[in-house]
Length: 408
Ligand SMILES: Cc1cc2nc3c(=O)[nH]c(=O)nc-3n(C[C@H](O)[C@H](O)[C@H](O)COP(=O)(O)OP(=O)(O)OC[C@H]3O[C@@H](n4cnc5c(N)ncnc54)[C@H](O)[C@@H]3O)c2cc1C
Image 1 (tube, rainbow, N blue to C red):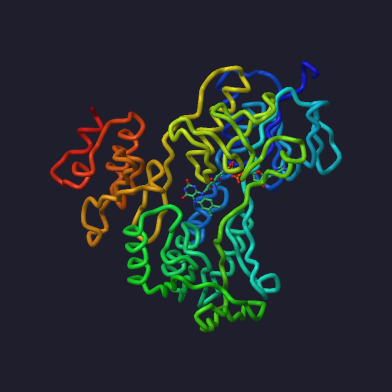
Image 2 (cartoon, rainbow, N blue to C red):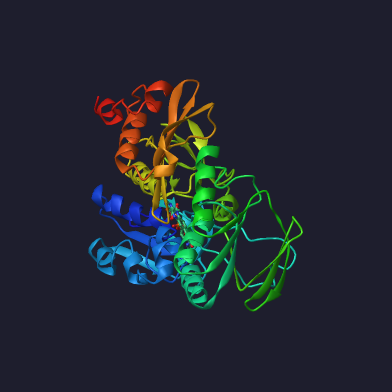
């Protein structure tokens, strides 16, 4: 290992940017290199399925930091460059243009990529996905002229796109294979609320319905569904999940299982290499179990832990997971991980579009979904983070002041 070898961060996204920031804030003064294969500085992805599609937000506004940040922080950028191999014994890595970089510490923040639709006709059809800025730009352009779109997958991203498309006056059909929306993340009560919300806005929501095939191309498509129906549309958007970018780590001999395996200190099976963000299968000290999360909170907080580990500090990752989704005028905020649970308690009236669902497992609070109740979401994060006991009866009783309980 050369003394002057830099710390190299592979993947210029949310976690990669945070790692660079945290390393500098943590006092690291050596060389720091950030490599990213997209032709753009690290940016926020959440607006890509939300406001960005309306044209209300320019691409520059998505950047997490302006170029001057990297200059001031003395981060050497290798943008639009891809790391193709890691040699752990030699402590070097190779870029797609042949450059070989030595490293003294290595961070992998390679994120995920979309899972493509695999039904007959999908490869030939003009199916849009939303992962990158390029995807967002392409979808925004097509939305400008499309009139009727099929959204395949009733998860967060598909539903956010559906909501924006309705705001833009498009006809929308959402096709979801499961019996309810956002089934992996929320309770049936919340799924039902969102199905009603979308229907009230004129979206056709098909549940328990798969895709048989797609016919056509160039903006004239027919989507054949398992209920025997044919949907003629001029735009197809699929949001059916992602897969972690862990092949680089796997080829380097690092332990991988549904992502790059890291411990509570964000260390991979090689202690000189850390990993953070969507690409990790990680131990979360708060949850006391291994999990893979796709959220800004996880990317940011785990990157802070990874930076601390590279600096030889002991800052285990034990933050309460949280997440949000914007659909129409309803902000869903999720604190903790409510799935699986054995009791889901409703607080407030869904008809008012301001309510929460409290999830309990073995009598303990494990997660809270809040619809248009930001103060309650903050209280929930405190209750969970500080392990303050709450009973299902307290959660259900509107007379109980949860903010006060959270304040201790
Ligand atoms: C449309 C959309 C909406 C979302 N909405 C929300 C939301 O409302 N709330 C929320 O909390 N989260 C949301 N998310 C999730 C959130 O954006 C991600 O969890 C977050 O971006 C993860 O950050 P990351 O750094 O782990 O990965 P990424 O941001 O994906 O960054 C990884 C980067 O590494 C690059 N890379 C991969 N391999 C290599 C290589 N070998 N060499 C060089 N570069 C490489 C990738 O191309 C990518 O640029 C959303 C995501 C999307 C796509």
